[in-house]
Amino acid sequence: MAEAKLTAAALKRWARAWGASLVGIADLERLRGIDTEPADLLDGFTRAVSLAVRLSDPVLDAIVDRPTPLYAQHYQKVNALLDELALRVSLALQKAGGRALPLPASQVLNSERLTSYLSHKAVAVAAGIGWQGKSLLTVTPQHGPRVRLVTVLTDLALTPDQPLKNRCGACTACADACPAQAIRGASTDSHYASREEALHFDRCRTKVLDEFAKLPHITGGICGVCVAACPFGRKGGRSRGAKKSAEPAHTPG
Image: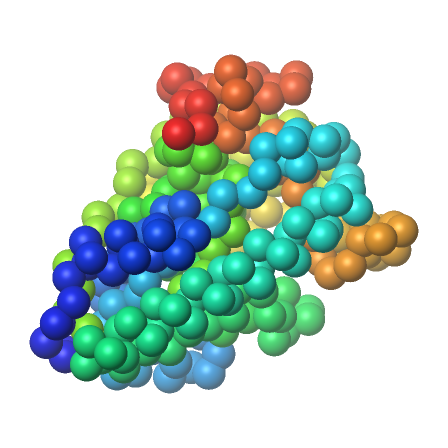
């Protein structure tokens, strides 16, 4: 592990000044055994910087049962910003004497499983940005799941953050709203053993790729319904027609 000439606090300040909404540092020991492409992706790295950018509330609030053209465009622009943030963070880490590997915010490597180099959501959970929700999205206290994520791997000995307690409770808002009825509604204290434990993944994939991707002006595998429905991201803490969470929801910070 390289000696850090840059503190985690300083890096977070810079990242927020560059446009990040939330920043966390994950100890990669928490992610050993995670599926990656290639399999040795994490070798030589000890930390992961997780960066989140908040999505527009009016864009998300317009989503009811399918993605909108505005959301499709917004999604692409936020991904571009995340990639720029990852590059800036990587340059800062390298300048401080460390190795840094920025991973694309949205690049599908396996079209069947819809996976990439690694799960940005898993990194964000390990970095204390949020917890793993019933939809498998990372749910943040400040913005719910209304964020997009990117990851930078490094070997600098940055002080890691601690994971958050799962606060979904008995809420089923995402499962109730899902147009594919793909979310099982299963609870977890930390993370699910597999994607299938939380989702009927084939239902989600079919709805997104076979139906939504054919809508006018919708590109890529996007939906957004469960993102929009989560009480933690909605003003007033309630989603349309959703059951009330077992814990008080937070309005965006």
